[in-house]
Length: 272
Length: 340
Image (cartoon, rainbow over all chains, first blue to last red; front, side, top):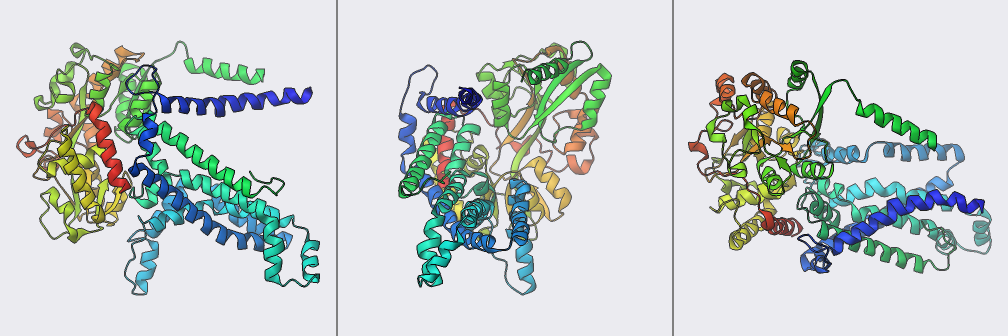
């Protein structure tokens, strides 16, 4: 009984700040324009026009590319972290975490002054007689911004799983004649999958919904679904279309999470 | 829990502050007033000014629409004022109480967004034009066409603001920037898509630093921001293209939900006083609609047609009107251009 009581604040919190807002968004997405309370699916029909599908596709693609790069970069980092001695481990983690204490916007602005035509990188290249490269306002800059900002979200879940890995399993693999590559493929990687999957979730979700990174580093040329939603709410007051875009985005995320957890059916959870 | 609640209620009670000074809530653009003016007003009328700032008309609209009773005076732009009038969000200004209203030049009265001068009193005005870097551009800059010149590929900044970007494109094509004609709007869209490969970026406020730093050769700019940049980089110059442009106004209005209407009138009247207007114009660098302010500013500013253009210089230019239902089409086109 006591346990039930202690749950109520959380239930209240969830209802007030999760369920009610989602229902409101759903309501606005179905509300017909021009006042009254008549419902319509026209906002959803608009989402499926080729123009907006292209934007959704671009968002998913850029988020996927960033997620893959984060995984390729993050996995070795997590392994190095997990393998390093405790004292060193601590300093390495601090080095990773400290930049995250700085405001996300400030860090993204910093990339702008690094990448711009008269920016720091091009100035340094200029010393070696290299012509300025145009780096800012490209899709590459957007991916860079996502990878830079979300990499820690990939590293830490993998690191946590790897650290808890029983060393005797690795010894056993070695004793049974597996070479390091085989040990990794057959033992380490499969066991670290829960961490990998939650890393993928934690990188993909913010990457697919971002509007700040694409605005600042993409220069507004790479409209993502996040930019589209922001514009509907703040510029054109089309809350109906903005809400239906938000709902579709939530569905996309739910579906991809569903796919991931299904592929992870044999695991005992560990996913976020 | 209950202690916390009591604390919150105490705070709320303190915030209400029964007795003490009268307060006036003012809502204005960021960095858009001489702070001394607020202090002087407080002293002169013994009214405490609570001053809040916004970044875009759209942000202001959402807050005024949802936070009833928060603001006694707001200073939005023309098309937004029209929208607020249409939606019955504003109180008429009692012009009998604005004794300094005569100081406003006649050419700034009776403008389309408030044709009968019932709801708004102009605060500042300006234009949209091209800010360019003289060291990077060797053609004469007098037409919007230069923003479509492949010679300056990837050296052009456009504003990420649909009314401005579509507006100047319509002007370049010889149409009105308030057009509701679908063919004209489609033509503007085609032109913007054609221009896209030449554009370095569609940007907002950060454009100022980028132009000062010489990141691009040409940019679509608001006149006051252009003046700010020219103060930091002597290579920059500003022109209003010959095809005409947008003249915009920021004007003082009283939201219907205002709590202190009396003080709002005092404030608006105070802001129209020539000595106060001069302080503001000198501080923020935008153009004042008050005749005596213009006379007192240094000649080098007021004789520059880029910043104090005469009636003749503006004959092709227009004020934004609220597009009502057509705004959705403009938005769709802007989305299509950016998503292309």
